[in-house]
Length: 375
Image (spheres, rainbow, N blue to C red):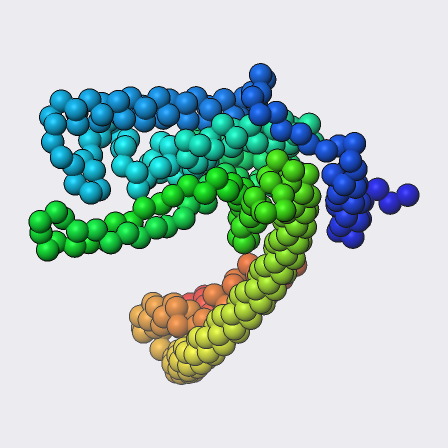
């Protein structure tokens, strides 16, 4: 049996998981309920609850300080109201979001909905854990992360605000301006984000609330996870195919480089052989010229010696003998035959051939003639 799992098998397994997950969410037995005042809080929601509770306490303290300030000074406020700040918080009615920060936050709700928002998030986190998701906070309080099968969904819960613009005018002055207020609507929405995809939003509607839409939320979450798994699988298949193509290209490039190197080596050897042949040809010509000089010199020495023998000139015999020995040694130095034979013998593995050189034979013959004449 083939134990390998193909991409088609993995796709089928993912689709089967998604069908079972969706069927689970649609079963009324598995309906998620939200407890308005939970007694057990999920570990990922506790930091958010603590932050919102602290933000609300700071907001209430700032309001008390504002009220005391107005009463103590007894000053008439502008139409927009005098403002004071405590820390990073403001009592300005135009900024009703708890814990307003320039940094991203997982929860952005008003004082009137924060408890409901916490209850929804707590129920969602507990349900996600029971469904096999890993629930955590990312970046401190920036995002709630749901992870499954190697994919991660990032959640935020926000409250929709209505923007109201009100014309205002300073008392006893012509100064006019528009005052913009953001008024909480009490409508909450959950945003689901996955890398490189469009965010999914589930909101309160006139027909239903988020509390009744958590199973629908998980249907969307399961689908997003499966889409992410399929996309990751396709990306991995594409990566493997690209790697295979790169390796094939690298092998082809290496083969071409090897063939080019072999061709270059062949050309180099051919050039070397051609240069070597030319050099050897020049050397052979030079050697043949030297040999011709040596042959001519030996003939000349033989000619002189034969004349001296014919004339029977004993008085000059010693001088002729010395001269002939010297002249023959010069001929031997000019004659390249010995060097050539030694080079050939060194390049050959055959036994040394007993070759008597013509120059040596001629020299011995002449010396024998001279010795006979002397005797």
